[in-house]
Length: 176
Image (tube, rainbow, N blue to C red):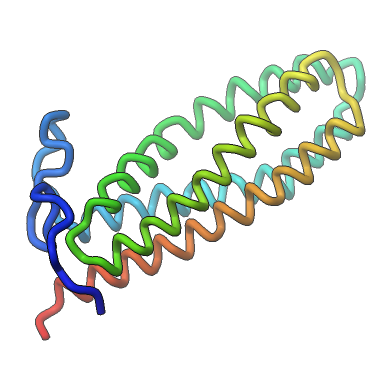
């Protein structure tokens, strides 16, 4: 088990003020870990649904309806993922400052996985959706599916890491 040398005066294994300037109030490390786990696994479930159900349907829509379908997908999926992704990111940032070294290491691994997600989202997925806005193209769709598989696997790693972080946080709370 890691040491509890504080990395930041804001976050300890007891109650701490996470982003107090933003008015988020007092949280415990385990509460932040629970929020992180819930938001991360929501996103893991969403990305697996997108990858196995929704993206494959792009090829089935038909040329007449495709442009409207694509625009609707981008708009609706953006609204759906905004809050959970913000919660995931904010809680991940807080966990990077945790006093426990083991939690910080796990949070860093999760941050690397999120960096992969963000790079793929910015450099492959978003451009592919922009290209598909003009109409379905099988080659672009194939590249989107390939890139999204890597993104899906990276998010799954984040989910596993979130379980580890919560396990570590709960262990710190338990009396020895």
